[in-house]
Image (cartoon, rainbow, N blue to C red):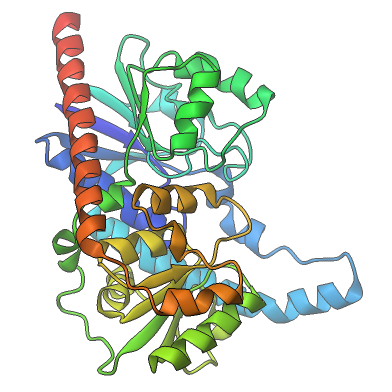
Length: 377
């Protein structure tokens, strides 16, 4: 059987690349032929135009934009290279490239299972509006359609979004979402046969991920790894306090080349090196969802500074693993954080139970697909 999967595989960040690999690997383990549909959102396709427009709202902002422009261009070129290299090496992409609905008509996707997920494929804000292929609008009417750990990226969606997506959701044969809030969103529009499962990167264990870390060098001395996506002075203060208290060297990973002048900063490492830095860290501080996920999967002591938006996915995984106390909102929490280590015997047991839950969902979905396809013959 063949499964064709549509996901956010080519967004220029580590989470998108790694969840794509994990999704592909999870389906491979069910002895399916797996294809990742090479669909590109319009904003991804026009990444240079979107990222490098100059701010003309004031002379000062325009001047700053001009100064930053070379760094942004170089950063994006490096990101394009490292993530393309990872995808080319590890992902079975479709031969056809899809940019809009017409391409799906020109190059029909033929599969036994049509799948959407995971990542924020149903987030209207992140995707800059409604994108029909993310709801499998291209899949034949009587085909088997499923969602695998898809995310809305928000706790609630407005009424007009619910009206748009409902007819598409009713076409699905099997639905799983990444956050519990996603189950609630779908229930409100009348879709009740839905469950929440893990992000696929957690469905692979630390031994599965170690294959990418095995041949990479890492710092000799113990270090505090910082993976920060949002500028935040409070975050910066926490880094200094924890590094001093733990006696750790600070290593920061960033996607922005403008920070290269900081001697402790690693700019745009390859995907395998990104994983290696997490695997060998003594402590992690992050505001990233997948930074948190890999800290958990690699059994690291860590703390989280919640990002300003789309934080539901972060709080959801911390709630599932009973690690909500790892979020720092103010400096009064630091002493307690420093004196309390994570008991991973408990966390790992929870994660394994969730993996079993996801396995059962996929097993049942694939059986249903086989029955449907056999009946269609």
